Every structure is written in structure tokens, then in C-alpha cells.
Length: 617
Image 1 (cartoon, rainbow, N blue to C red):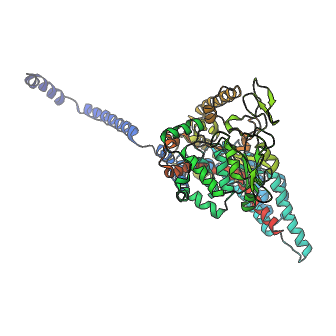
Image 2 (cartoon, helix red, strand yellow):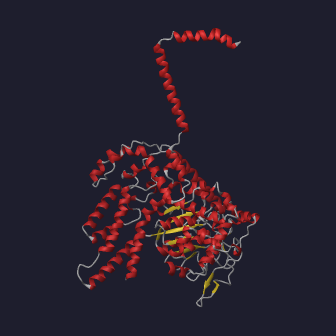
Image 3 (cartoon, rainbow, N blue to C red):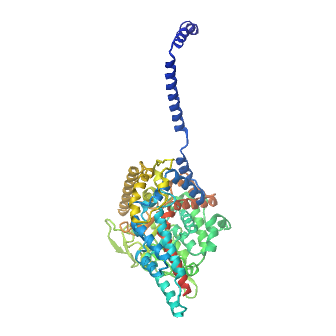
């Protein structure tokens, strides 16, 4: 019926309209149809096409090696025009005029072979944050590095140090002059090294994810940025002990593939209970998984009965282990100076705390006859777990001495003392800390000041790259620096993320508020053992004295660990889980290489040169 009606009435009307429509109407309709189809196609491609920046950022979270990571971030920097930002040496966050002048002075002195001027310039101006070059804000835009002007300055300082090492020689064939020249070099490198300060790597706790510390050490070692002074507590103390007791030839195979090295161990000799119920109990109550327990046994078997002094004489690395005794007879910071004859593996167990791995934890020493004996057998000394200790002013507690006449104690069992890490500054001239916190759930609260811009949203970029040709030549004079502003002012609009500022500030405020509330609750004694184990970390110094220039905090990213949290309870894939945690630790360090290189490369060069001349002398 409807078909017949359409044939009788509708089709004749349609035919009449089509036949009598003017041609210009069809042109207009065709024009509008083209426009509609064009926008439909654009919308379809917009919602279905892959954003190259998002694809690279997604791939960045799953890279397996540093070379792969480096290739990926190079593409990200190109897409976000951060390569232009690096060439634009002008920034309010550092004194680019001072840096530019110092580069010229050092270059002129080196090319004119004026050693005395070089030494004078370096003695007066060789500090870690000279001209503000170590500010963290300069290292959160480009993954590949910071301003080229800063890298040029560091490279020139290293060139001058190498020049002094090679070129200060005798112009007169005189033995007395040669001796004075050698002493001059030794005094110079000693004085500058002393004024520059030292870096200490602190491996903090990490009962469940402590193997991430090993990944941090691996990344720093193969990049040549591993400090000579290493300290730690709990599992961090075990990792530090492994690194500081082995020579490079012994350490490299472990860092390359620790799973292959551990496979040779007899699992039947390990006191590890693989029953799921006990595994869950160990994780929840004690905070240690099977992976960690096996690793601790591996460390104990590897280092043997080595003492702190023997380890230092073997490797020249300074091992520091933090313990929390209930008696002042035992120092809280153990190293080759404060406790030279202490057996290292007993210090590791003491750092973990009494009642975790053993209810009877004692520190053993080697006596003059090389016998291993308890350090204080007559005293009933217990060791607190790291999360049970705070170093700031307590609320609503009064102090008293324990029954053994030991140190002052609080009613809640917390020691009232300064952080043991403050002793590092006194003993080894440490003024810069690299802190590894193997607590990924703290990453949003702690490491927000080192997040790169691209994490918070897509950065607007321009594929034409029309500004690149304007930035290739870096000016050499102050006049040129001022004039160059007209050429580089437009670069910033290509390197800023418009969605970053507000989101970052909100996240900073929320993170600081949560941190503050946790600290206050801990001081009031409102956190139970489980919460303290997860959320409370000891600090190397007070928060007020820890300025941003003095520390770099490394925390594994939460996104890697949430999806694989079940690995903690997996009792049958230890040799697969351990390399995974190591890789997570490595990933957390790779974005920080430029900052660490700027802060530490001069220090390590001074260490090497001083030790060379000291041994020759």
C-alpha cells in the first residue's frame, strides 16, 4: 500500500522538484555537502588518530633499557619543542650572564695556558650551585638535559681540571721545582675538593620494594654517577653492603644479571617459608616478602664475615649502616670510622630491627685474635625498626632513661636524638644527598618537584620548527645576550604546557598537606605499625634544613607497581620478580641523569684527580 502511494504521489513530486531546481542551487548544495563531509572526516580522524606525543609517553613507561628510553625521550623533546628550550639559554632560574662570563674567562685562561688564573677562578667559584645551575626547575622540561649553556659550563670546568692535571709541569729541569709542582697540584685538588663537598647515596628502607634500590645503584654505576659514600637502613643497608664490599669485577656480574648469580644458590638452605598463609603474614605483619628474604640471605652469603674496615680497605667505598639501639653504647651510624671491627651482616640485621627477622639481634665484632664475639654481651640491647623512630620534637611525651642506663627514651619507645645521617656531614664532608625511597606509593607526595611537564598533560607543539634557525648560534658577549632576547622570546610559548601550572600547584598543596598530617599523626602516636611501615620514612636531616639544592629524591613510579602488586605475594617466581624490581628502580633514575651529572660530575672528577696524585705522592 505504502509502496503504491509513493509511486503515485511522492515520486512525481520529487521528480518535479529535481527537474525544476536551478543549477546554481545544486552548486550551493554541493559546496555545503563538501564542507560537511570535510568536517565529518576531520572529526573522525581526530577521535581515531593516534597522537604521536601520547604514543611516545605511553611507550616511555614500558621501555626495557636506557638506550631505548633515550631514543624515546629524544622524540618527545622534538615533538614538544624542548630542544628549542635547551638552545634558548635565557632563563630566570639561573644567572646566564654570570655563567657566560665564567665560561669565557676559563676558556681564555686555558687557551693562554695561564694555570694560576685557572686555579684562582676555580678556587673562588667552584660550588655545586654556581649561578643557580643546579635548580630543579631547570631539569623538569627536557628529558634529554638542561640548558646547553649549563652543560657547556660543566664541560669547560672539567676541561680546565684535566688541563691542570696534565699541564702543570716543570719549565726548569729542577728536582725541587718538580716536587713543588706536585705538591701544588695535590694541595689545589685537596682544597677545591674540600670546598666543593661530597655526595652520599642513601638507600632508605623499602621492606617490600627494597630491591628497587639495586636498580638505582645499577643505573648510577653504569652511568658513572655512583657516589663513593653509600648508606642505608633495613633492606637499603643490605644493598649498600653488597655494593661496598665487592670490587668492580665482582659487582658488575651481579648488577648485569643478579637472577643468574642467585640461581647458583641452594634454595633448600634458605630459611624461607613458602606457604601462602605465612607469606601473607610476613608481608602484612613484618613487611618482608619472600623476594626480600632470599635477597638478604644472598647478601649474607656473599659478603661473609667482612667488617667495615676490611670492606673499606678492599673497595675504598664508605659503607654506612643506620641502626636504632636502645643504648648509647652502640653508635647509631656504623662505618669504618665509628665501628671498624663490626661484622657487616650483623649490622644489617640490627638495622632491620629486633623482632622482624629474629628476636635475638646482636652486633658481633672481630677481636684482636680474629674471633667473632658479641659486642656487648652483658647488655640487653634491642634495636628499633626504622619506622618506629622519629627525630623531631615529640608531642605530649616526656623523656626518661631506660633500665640499662641507656639513652633517653620516650613513652612510646621512640628515641629522642638527631638523625644519624647528620654525622655524615661531620665525618665525610657530605653536603649533597641522593636519597632513594623504595616506596612507590609516596611518589606523588615526595618527587613532585622533579616531575617533567609532559606528565601532566599534552604540550602544545608546532611541527614547522621555524624558530630553530634563530637559536643555533649562542652569543658570546653580554651585548649579544641582550639583543638575542628579541629572537628567543617567542620560543617559550612553544615550550610551555598551559595545563601544567594549576594542576601542579594543586597537587603540590595536596601532597604537602598529606605529608604534614602523617607527620603530626606519627608524633601524636596515632599511627599503628602497619601504617608507619608504609608511610613513615626517616630523613637525613630536618625538613627545614633540607633545601632543594641539597637533595635529590628518587622514588619508583606508582604506575609500574599497582598492576604487579601481586608479585609481592608470589612465592614461586622469585627469579622473575627480582629483575623486574631492579628494572623499576632503573627507570626511576633515568630522568634524573642530567641533574645528577650537573651536580656530581665535577665532584667525581676532583675525587679521581686527588686520589691519583695522593697515591703518586
